[in-house]
Structures are given as C-alpha cells and as structure tokens.
Length: 87
Image (cartoon, rainbow, N blue to C red):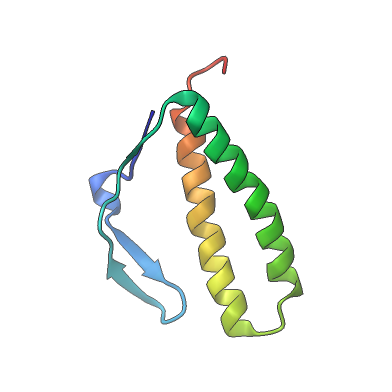
C-alpha cells in the first residue's frame, strides 16, 4: 500500500500564523495488514486528541491541536482510500 499526497498538494497551511508553507513530500509504503494497524492506531489517537481539544483552555494550544487533528484526519482518509475493497 502506498500513502502519498498528489504533487498539487505540496503546500500546506500553517493555521497558527495563517500562511501557506512549502512542504516536503514524504512517501510511506505499507503492506495492507500494517496499514490497517496504523489506521486503527491513528483513529484511536484522534478520539483522544478530540477530547484534549475540547478540554484545552489555551487558544494557541487548541489551534495547534486542531492543526494536528486535520493532518492526522487526512492521513487516515488516505489510508482508507488505499485499502482494497473487502478488507
């Protein structure tokens, strides 16, 4: 399984300073069982992260956590999109 961003998505957004930044492309190759484990771990962590966002008083820290949530959510979506049907 390959997990990657298409070339037109090499820019990301820095929500703490409201500006776009260049991002280096990273590619990770996983076999399906390993991808499923990573996906499950990320989904579990995202649940905990969402609770932390809700309980955080500092707006700056909350913004950083929300940015992390968006990044991890994209990764989970990419892992789901790469999964073979029936698995």
